[in-house]
Image (tube, rainbow over the protein chains, first blue to last red):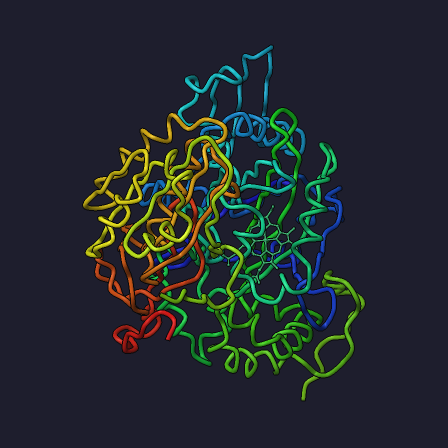
Length: 356
Length: 198
Ligand code: HEM
């Protein structure tokens, strides 16, 4: 299916919007009516046709506009993309992984022609046609990680593996849920996760790290994470929090349906061949409450999850003050009927909302 | 002088130890202010015969007592910034078997540890002991400026002037804790500053 790319903004007038198709394939992150942190990882081996799981690196209608937004963030703050000196090889690994995956998965959008170390990369949506020498940095306009992640939706952390730990030694981070690459770069798995409540005590990070250290090349894994964002703002960085934080206070019962967004991250994990590094793409999907409510199952479930979420999580995710207003809105979409297991919308089998 | 007991915290926050004399051919001790007490506590003539002390008094008067220990080398500097190139130079010569001891404020230990790690010494091999002020070295996450010796929470960024709250999230690379705007969601509503551990 050919993608109609939107011309839209994630700042200022916030013209971002989801098509019907994008709503149907939105990665709703709750597989049951309650939520708690868990080691929720599975193999990343495709998924239902046209779902966000289908391809290795999902490309959707927001692609071009997201890349424009990334370029603006980087122009304001080059520290959002950093790579410690020993990570250049991992950058080439990542460039290869993305170019090969995208050209195979979307042959009508991307082409990769390789002749020994002479490579030609064609990115039709962004109008790029570059020839370069693989492993020769001087033949690209940026370092390899920056070059390819300026053309790929989602944030990227590139983790060096040593001493039975993972080290955040490189990254491209412009669509983050309120954490700073510049501050966290060089930290290990437990250190960068330090601010997360409850999960350390539950042993989640110890088990998660064990899983990650054993990920093999060609056998990627994935998980979903989520938070809440007022306005479809991609760059919810701590760096700019003094500018965007105030937007959380602009929510009213009248505008909440359109302004409040569920923010879901599709997180994947790939082993890289030459460097043995692990790459962690964090792909952000946004969906307005009013669009989520078009799926009856999601309406019922989101109300229950947000209502019963532990205070620590609502506080950490930054929406504790707005939770009562969210619940007033969401409760209209919860008629008390049971919901089917799993994250999919199940539009054909789940009953419509019973009017009160 | 009694040592300050830091309350339990998150996993990025450094945990400081207690210095002990270890076997080694060479010993490098870097200290500021009351850190001198920790050195005085472990000093023996044998240890001092192979020890280089780099000391920043920061307004205290321990320097004479340290130099009276007759270390192999003794340097007294006016500030960490003034001493840092010397520290880097000494670490360049760090051989296997060099023992590194850091003691005093968190800012001093954090920065000197960063230099030692740059020189290839794993942070787990470096001994530390906190003494004296519990002030923190803070990075403003917004403007990236570092404010030294922050004693209160919240505090005003010495670079951009934002009102910042003091997080426990700590970066070894920056040798700093993170400061984040406290009144972003309610401009002007800044609580009265209190001591960080009050
Ligand atoms: C190696 C890849 C990973 C990277 C680079 C990464 C990075 C991060 C970062 C930077 C944060 C924000 C922490 C903050 O508040 O400053 C975070 C949060 C979190 N991470 Fe990870 N993470 C990784 C893998 C995992 C895995 C495998 C799990 C599995 C359980 C996990 C669970 C969590 C949880 C539960 C949170 C809190 C999220 C929330 O409530 O919104 N992470 N992660």
